[in-house]
Length: 115
Length: 109
Image (cartoon, rainbow over all chains, first blue to last red):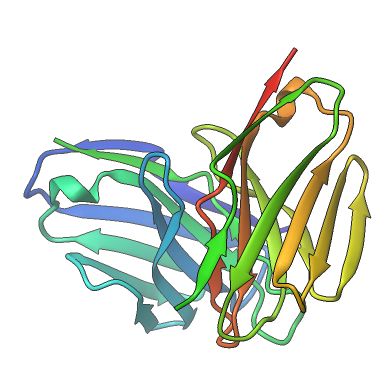
């Protein structure tokens, strides 16, 4: 069965510090991968998605970036965090388009607080 | 633009039935999803509808009318553990998920 991991679970960072969040998927090949942010009491905002190694699509221009160095690894980064970057960061995976329902399955999330 | 509407909050009694509505306007349609999200946790997949009609899964059912741009999630025999937010999401013609803001369901004894 497929599993998705995210770390760290919680993070408190000062404004202006760098960020690196990691997501890995097990039990599937060539998944579509997604980074979302959820502000307190709000809906999910898609940040980045990837259909393959090195292929990243950005949905929202901001000071965040994403990379996919391996098939089942997705990394979210920032060089300098802003207060507005605080939130709940969720990584998700879905099967390759055309191989079944495109249901997205979420990792446990990282709660980021920028002070 | 693309839009998903669902009520912000609903309250129901343990043992009762509740219906959470979702209306959508999107560029194309490739399916509608319902997720459950407990406070502080990640969303978990509940149901997927791509054809009109009712899909039943135990105590949970989901209905879709594509011509009306409308879906509902029906929860029967409510339990306290059903207290959560319920997220409606539609996959558009580009296979991107458009998310609603979620409905917070409060269950009272």
